[in-house]
Length: 404
Image (cartoon, rainbow, N blue to C red):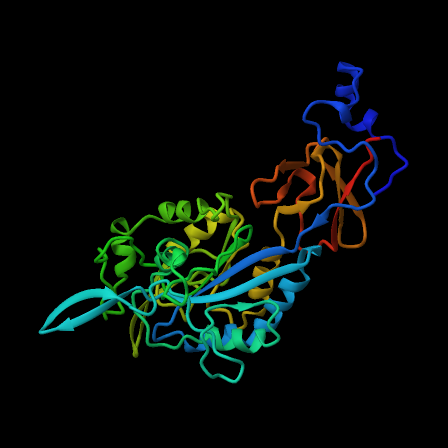
């Protein structure tokens, strides 16, 4: 893009003081000798979305509630952040371990068709298909997504969403093709990963087999909280997700959101024993339709967002605002792939904020940082300081200031 401003004195003063050689002519320089006629291109933002749906016996109403409000979620994704969104959605369940009784003996085994496996995506008419995820470009996205989140209520009563998600995004499932029974091809290079957990009970995950904690049919006992020290820690699971890399070695940006058993009023996790004529049930305080306190869910959400904007209560009557807020979080990345950028020192990013004001950011000013391109990997700009992106931004543009 052409500009009448002569940038070297403003953008690169140190180079001119230190040497009489033009920065354009320095060894290894990528500065262009004349203004470019084309601006750098901001690539569509790629996000792979993994919903982890509790399919235990108490979740029919909650699954239906999520399905009802998916139009708002999808619209929020498509409109957010001022950047074109390219997303895909897959669903797994919270079922990993199965309790089996044989000859008066109890033991555990894996759920063979679940345990982190992407579930089949129905066609819009409800018939079966071979698909394991649905693309944002699919004209039947909404109807297929609505059917997909309704995973039924015959799953494990020991909800293990952390372990299910870990299995879903780790080897061997990620390196085994869908045709061969894995999840290979769902996670894309250069795409962020958004994990959305939907459950009314505490996480009871462990990487150990058999699991060290057993959930019984006694609804008055909180087995997972009592045996928390035996479970794989929240810290270990969070680190596993945050250290994910794509096939080219690039760090994968991971976002985490939970609609879980926490208080409606303030998202706190607190044990509450509900005694009634129908029975005695462990719940979270201020969450009457939960079946356990969400200590681990709150802790995991906090690992990804200390303000807990990524956490909400499963006990809400409507999930519309919850899903809209998750869409806002998903739509706004604090990094962007860029192509056709000759040198980061010449980059100027203009962010059009809500209301039409334009904020200008640059590497030179310290509110942007830059990661150069690698083999088959575009360069990336990271936002910081006052230039952090917001959900209500209208547009993001990358421009090049002339050096010649």
